[in-house]
Length: 254
Image (cartoon, rainbow, N blue to C red; front, side, top):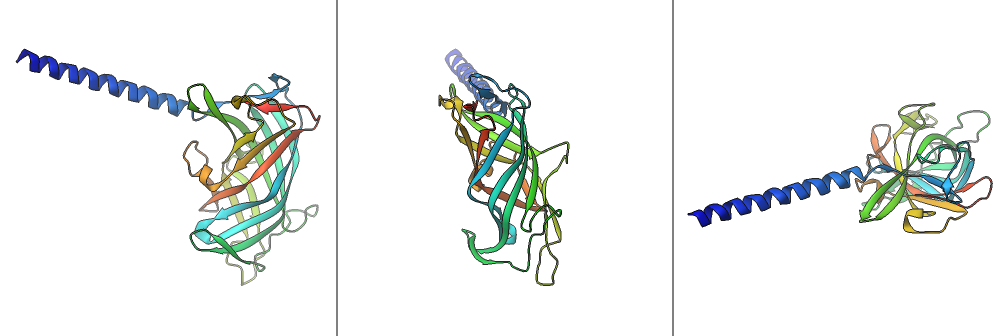
């Protein structure tokens, strides 16, 4: 009888210890999903006000699967890029997407079908050409530990609170009878980019460039709270952004 009691007690203790370890590991992983990173220049925290420039690698795509629609933009300019805090990994960006065209898609792979010429994207002001989309973002460097002492680095783009607390960009369409999309659609929420060049957490030397890549798969992974909406519909960005300092100094994020 005593042996059975001791065995039961031992099993209960092991179960309790296992649950504690599982809970602690889960809490640690959860905590590391959004640890603030840093922006470094020559090994030191980047100074506030440091200017950042950038461009898009190839074309970039905003996918809206529920509408069987994609917006493909051939160019992007960084109209304003500025580091707010190197020690906190914070920056601001005003991005101008150009030569943006709306396409219809089909199938599980969302293959492009035809350009929706009747849904032309209009300029937001006289200084911008048709097909332009202006985005204002707060950029945050965040880390996620993948194994002991090894972290991947990400850049989370959220709405710039000085412009809007919820909206990253607006898309303004013409409204002929042939266009099924509303005249004005807000792009809300946030999007995450994985840093694949200039990630100092992986022991890379400081580079002239930082490269961040976004994809539907990354946004669907659940690592962060990023969620993008095109109106009321879930949306995903597929594209890469190449960033560099206006001073041409080597830098990186960690």
